Length: 539
Image (cartoon, rainbow, N blue to C red; front, top):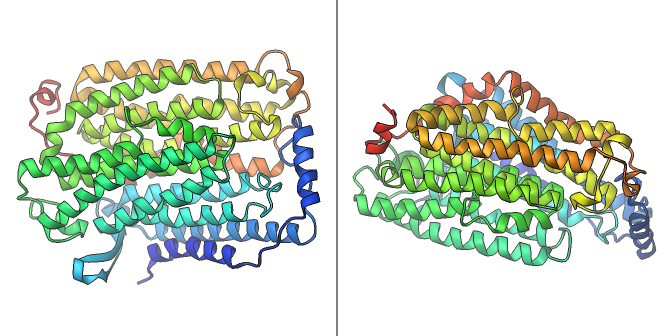
């Protein structure tokens, strides 16, 4: 049997090591100064025009690093596509491509991986986004001494961990990947981010994540103490090792996992690290941070909170539903008031993640299928929006909304792409996020109509913050600072084109994703006896 998942995890990890092992050739100081000067003077030019081409050894080294990174990310995607073609959709609710080897036998720890339909789609989403992020960052670091060598190595290291965290079927292995992801992201923000606040943003991200991780570690140890194993398949189910867990203990263990996942998601009130981290990130970093890493939180709620502690879920349904509704409205309201495009998109994601957690804890097949599908579609839609914002920042040298006006007049293709990605963010019918949001609303209404009605506020506000941002930046008289903008280049078209295609295709025909996700989502549905759920028509 081909170890598909191990190969997919190992390939980007090997690529990261190879990049670090290459001889270090520094870009000449004079060339870097020329590049910085060109950037400062060329605010109205394109991303490629504002960077002077590197020379001699520095150029060769930087270009080789980029090609290696792109090559390994594409090879990883091809491996995962090959694995997907062998995935049995008729059995999408069960783990497939399972590998299990003793890792630390003394403590019952295994290297165990496998995927169901939800994990598979999230891994594929991650693998699609990484090469696009690499292309988007192709010229971002040309003015650095190392040409962005460290940044590209960190991207590949992070990809290996992202695949690992979704594929892990040993609770301890999941925790290792969950915590290890923090290190690449910390440096991607703190060292390679934007603005003077990037170090503070990186530290805040790390502290929040570590706090949640340490709480979860206590719960992971508790799972082993009471279950006698870390293997997920042996812990879940009516005959699983945690089936006879004391209700009080189950609630505390549930909280240990949930708090860590709520921070990662991010969910109000433990969300404050995200806007600052996204605002200080390069657009590519923000794509991976919001498009993939934050999904680990909601995926963890489905995979671990729901299935390890089904009885405890009943106790926390309404508190989590209430927090989800606050996240939806709060994130949307704050997005309206933002003057920075990166922070605005980050706040929209807080609102969108509220829909996902609301769908998960509504405990109906439709809502959980919609929530799982939302994770994938949000990754594509928000990833595309961050990348388009990145193209605007590269041209103008600023992310402030007030620094743009009339872009549509000089770069109509770029403005058109911006509009489509924005409309995807507000879940316009015909685009991929719509069917996700629709299923969440159907399932939540079956659970209880009141949360569904309140959640509609988020939909209305989404139209306001997206269309208002488009109006202020793309329409109106052309500002002098954007009059020199050029339209999408060939490389930039390859960055946003695949995501636009996926958003449209899955908007018109979502069935392939639903075939993979629905059986796995239905498995996680918890039969609850909460009185309020029954009164809302859950039965």
